[in-house]
Length: 102
Image (cartoon, rainbow, N blue to C red; front, top):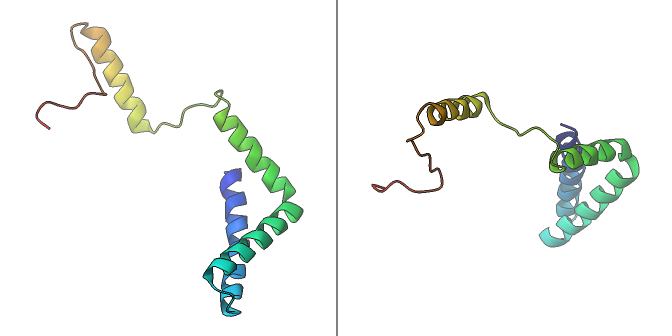
């Protein structure tokens, strides 16, 4: 959530600056560059707390200790598959192969 919040703050800085530079007729490429640099500088200077929270959230997600993001349907499917395999040792589950009729 912190990463999304920080990203939206940066986007809210970028879009008006981009529109301003387009209005000033700097050209699309220069408008992107100028708006990006200014939005980066402003977010770096004034939104340190949000940036640190976003960094911590990303570090936690990619550290390997985070819980996997799975929906209730995926969990139910995995449980049903595990029960099927445990109850019937002759059944093979091969998710990485395509069906023969496809």
